[in-house]
Amino acid sequence: MTATVSPVTLHAGDGPGQPDPTPELHALYRGFEQELLVPLWTEIGDLMPSSPRPAALAHRWQWANLLALAERSGQLVPVGRGGERRAIALANPGLGGAPYATPTLWAAIQYLNPHEDAPVHRHTQHAFRFVLEGEGVWTVVDGDPVAMRRGDFLLTPGWRFHGHHNQADTPMAWLDGLDIPFVHHTGSAFFELGPDHVADRSTPARSRAERLWAHPGLRPVSQSGPQVSSPVAAYRWEHTDAALRDQLDLEAEGHPGVVEPGHAAVRFSNPTTGGDVMPTIRAEMHRLRRGATTATRREVGSAVWQVFEGAGAVRVGEHEWEVGRGDLVAVPSWQPLTISAGTDLDLFRFSDTPVFERLHADRVQVDEVQS
Ligand code: GTQ
Ligand code: FE2
Image 1 (cartoon, protein in one colour):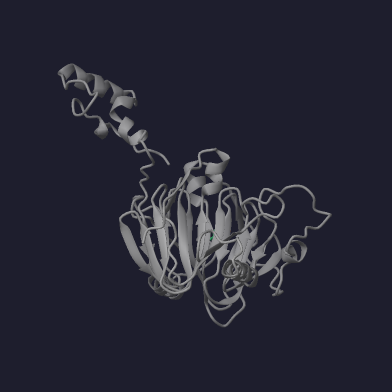
Image 2: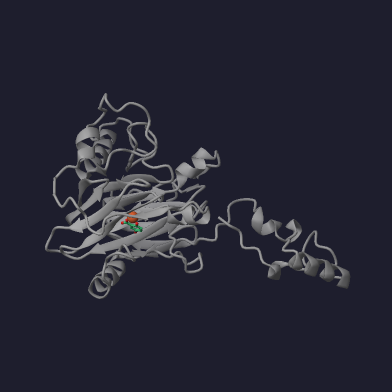
């Protein structure tokens, strides 16, 4: 999001529109450096490209490798006050080693040993969890314990106190997504500690938030008006799965509903607005029938995809990867993306698109399906 400009990039006399490299010009450029000034004419190609040229690169991370390192961290690294979470972030190879999957999005594998606690805190960053496998952890959001199970998508919107506790005799790992890089770049982070331990260790199958909010098409009359983030604490896999299955069944019966042939998709939504679950993050689940290929699509803003089930191929620009269960792919802004399903293929996706829609800077280009 921030362009890197440094005096080193000041080149005299090399390129269209550049003045001759006279001693006087060099003296002028030294003057700029001394006064911390940078002229546009040496930077314009980088700063104002004809179409987005993100620093982030397309990249694939394999779940098996992430999980092995998370397990090792579970043996070597305690979780507790200070470090706060045993979370290991994807670091995009184009972003200089920063723990950013994309310029705006954090994606991490988080790991809790049996009967471990992650302490309570809150922050302005918006967060979600997506569960690839396992169960036994409850995330307690503002005092409301929310069970985490395979396929569930759970929200921790900004400034809610939250801690996690593993009630099982087995470890659990899941995917965290947050807007940490966006908040970092914009200098808008606030953070506060809560109690060192989760007070409510009860283990209800359904949270209070779900009992109030997670009935299809029904909202409590007592709770009128829009809320900035979705009050639905957990979107359960049985509903997501059924919605995707119904779309493909409707397609087979000749009715509309799918995105394109063999490609069903649902977006997790805020029932008080119909919009995205949180102001900075969009989240979706996609299902491709075996053999289906998506249209090649690019859009402003970045995304991270995770294979939930099945296998296939993901092409981003010049890169192509075989992907299987749990594998993650970062898709930078405006990079063309095509996904092919080798088997029936379920994918979770999150992106920063709501930010660009709010700024009216969103743009999408869809090409014909390539065979
Ligand atoms: O679980 O509260 O991956 O605060 C990064 C920051 C997880 C969390 C992360 C966090 C959390
Ligand atoms: Fe947190």
